[in-house]
Length: 637
Image 1 (cartoon, rainbow, N blue to C red):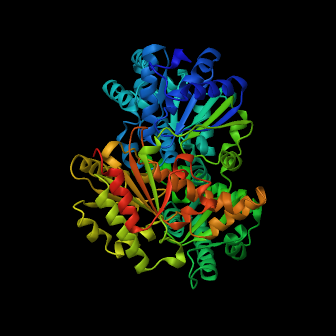
Image 2: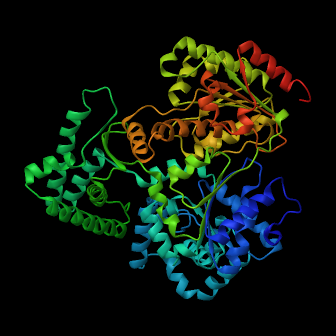
């Protein structure tokens, strides 16, 4: 343990954490561990794994959701390396680790970047790749340097740019020989990306010890990675593209297919007050089969031809310096997958009109993305919000797992949890009067809590409800500005918003309005006065859409008696707890958590809260909330 633990002192319970991880890796088992914010989970899991990984030759694959979380792992590896030699590198996408202007300008997703990269090399149009042969000695020297000193992607990019070498190939070469590879969840959750990643680095599952950080994100991330959609807009673009390339037979097929989708839309959605409807998978081909008289085998042959034509179109567009997409290829790939998954109970086939008319393949079972775990040496899942651990184990299909929940680190006197007993965001209770009453609570809490306050709502609908009740005008009365998270904002726009919010903590403070389950209520760290209090408006239960209902039914078949709990209640409770956790980022920080929903007083919900939260709950009305806030913040601030 001490060999790979670079700090002088262990925090409470860190030694037990390290011993658990060490034991499961040694025995080829798995671990699901809940440990609070400020515990030091990253350094603890590395200290537990590395002695076995280094001595026995296992590769540590550390997976996280955000770049910020991935960067933290490299920082800890740098600290470890000052004490004991250890190598590590952070994988990013080709788009982020590429110097070629064409790829940077024209690719938006990992798959397209991979295709473009392959084609540019094949055509001899990547000078950075060509330079690897000419500058072999320099390439090997930089590789050795980063094997001696764990490096951030930006550092590798700088060296590569100076010498005109490919940063992605450099990173891959370092990864090939490193003790630790840090990467995004997507590298292992998406079957196609995982297969390519494993082959690219010549990895065997049995040689891996895998860490899933912030593992409460896994169910949603796995569903997303296994799901797919295409729009009627893409189909129409594919028709034009096929004609442009004189593929008139394909254009005709796609025109008939598109007409079939519109007929299906008339039947399922046009005159109904719903945004999505389940469909039988074979119905999307009914019009094509009826008009062209093709059978199943001919249909598959035709779709495979579309994929091949799509590859040729991409190559041609790269040659001409145009964006490297092919709508024909995309439709072919999607429909082949649609056919392959027909008859599967763990998929929902959906027609949707939320973002324009679309066909969606909706995965229902997140555990399907983790089937490879059975073949690895060991896997560690860790987060501050996995309660109840047994439910996480079931939903993600983790076998042979040791479960451990560590106690809170936040001091009892530093936590205040107040639940309003006279408001709720339940659908039937929503009204302008209810929103006005909630705004009264929010405004008083923002006024009485020093500096910065987060306001996270159950949904964007509730967020708009608060604004319709003049929240923005009322917040101005407190002397603090209101910053509002925008639905669909880019990462850069959101980063600017959060930086602005944090800067207000050095003045009189501000209020940040967003949603539970969003990037600002889960992916951000707010230390000290950057968030002294959080107001949670409602409980973020999903709307009972066909996809939510399908997952509940699927879980009910798989886990009798638990379908609604696993598929509907628990995901919402975890989002609420994540948002509540923004306030206490260390054991010393004080913070108020205000919940504007009486349902949090129900035992059926309280049982899903971590101990530190459930133990501190107090039922209040508006006057009593103000009294408790004044007492809590009256001294020493």
